[in-house]
Image 1 (cartoon, each protein chain N blue to C red):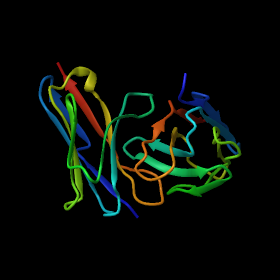
Image 2: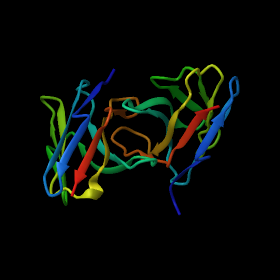
Image 3: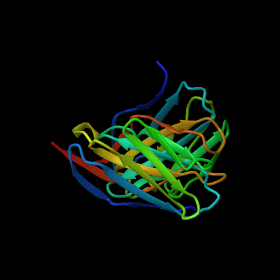
Image 4: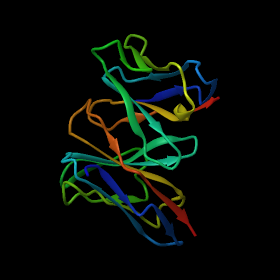
Length: 113
Length: 111
């Protein structure tokens, strides 16, 4: 069963805590992406990676970090520096290059306790 | 950088009517324009896309048109059904970066 998986579906963060959101794909895609979705704001790009061991900041990278040690995995860490982390987080992947379709995972909803 | 504007933010239609959602983009180098449908609590699903060398594309009840000169593209849904109710996003793909999305349109189809 091919596709993109994100875990967990819901995640709770305490003040001052770092949390990591998982994203795995078995589509053999080179590129992976993280977006944040807030009501009425659409999807905003946090980080993206076009190849293993390389990634670039998106529009709202502050307070987030990523790694890309394996082609199929692109975890996102929400650090304590992100003061407003409550949102729906979406991971996507695509073959590299422009004009390539991005496929999305089911999302992780992060809530602050 | 690229900026994508999407209108309207909400759209209510009667079942069987047509729905049109419009987007404009700013970067003339963008050359790929997908449309996604998102149901509540789920990830967006691609429904149709168009590349810059094509002016129109149709897939059953869904069509997309692109005007590169004016830098705008539109989604047309004909014979709407209640299951078409969802949030729809347009996007543009500028060079050397990821898709840039519009803010979404909430479509409600009432029976």
